[in-house]
Length: 114
Image (cartoon, rainbow, N blue to C red):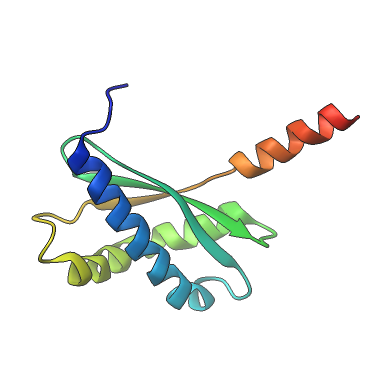
């Protein structure tokens, strides 16, 4: 995999900040009682797609919550576009994924402690 360009990194940081703020505000309408954290954003080289990784706490069915967010991706992209219209030429398509790296680390620690 090719190293991210400075522009990709800059756009990723901006999207991470803005989507994080938007999910904090709109989170209760998506899933009541769940705290959303944007852990990572990866933007494709052509800036057309942003892969956004989320950590959810507490969530009984995190995959369902991520599906709900993906169902609202168009609206989130529109709102992101209003926030960054002077910084981005094109607002990338938003794809949301569950970041289960913390769960993975926890499972490894549990195995090591056994």
